[in-house]
Amino acid sequence: MFILPREKPIQMSIIEALTRRLPKNHPLHPSLQKEYNQRKKGLVGEENVDYYLSYLPESQFHIFRGIRLIVDHKPFQIDTLLISRNLILLIEVKNRKGSLYFDDVYNQLIWSDEEKREVLEDPLQQVKRQSRQLIKWLQEKRQPNIPIEYLVVMGDSGTFIDPKSGPLYQKYILHAYSLEEKIDEIMQHYKKPLISNDALHRLSTKLLKHHNPLIIDPQKTYKYDPKDLIKGIQCEKCKRFGMGRTNRKWTCPFCGATSFDAHKAAIQDYFLLIKREISNKECRDFLKISSIKTAYTILNSMKLSYKGKYKNRIYFNQLRTGK
Ligand SMILES: [Zn+2]
View 1 (cartoon, helix red, strand yellow):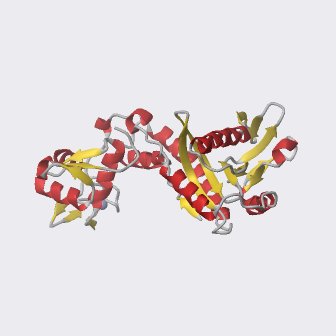
View 2 (spheres, rainbow, N blue to C red):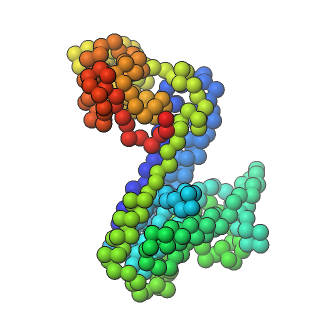
View 3 (cartoon, rainbow, N blue to C red):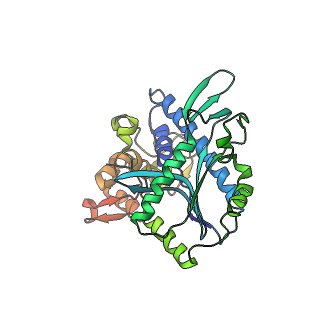
């Protein structure tokens, strides 16, 4: 059963908002696009792995996607974590088209395609490090001793794993489509449950409680000046900014499209790109509206947490961005 859902990385939401709100000729666009495509590929690979995991027996495994824990004041994140009464399994997901050769003499991963060749960090070392960190975490939290295994899974079925790779790797590296069979094979060695169903549920609850999602400061990370952002409300149809409000409805002056809730996306953009709280005045400025009453009505309609009264009210968002 899936316990922690896979979320779109917060960086992707920030880049989407920046792509909308930075002028077309802004110099940041190419690097934003590049990072977005890479993250998207990663997400597709992880979702591919989730698809094969969905075939596992529901009651046997608790599955956590992207859980981030802290041990020795250092965070570590596990792409996919499976816990059961018999065994804990960590899965590191890799997404890279081309050919991969795993060298077990120097613990390196050599990636190549027709044009290039690169040495990358060995994902097996990565997942081993995470399992050591997890063991430490479990000890600190006084959790029962359950054996830990790990795997490295290729989320993109177009990856060629060089069969000449070191034999040590053959046990741990596989394609996502072989995952179900591999987990079956591993479970053959761990037939005996070591903890009760209750203890498994307690461990699940503890993991979820200590999940510590990454919070990033968008302006520091992407190095943009908030002054460069385009203000106003974007038309969903023609994508231009400048919708105006009459009779509780937004209307696009360019294509005539109308909307009742186009302000929601704009306020989300504000939270993603500017800061985590907004006042009535800041809302009017960013949405380019003049009425205090309209700003009050739409902010209140968004069911945000707040403090203060009427036009001095400050509203807060729950997004995982800094500032
Ligand atoms: Zn329009």
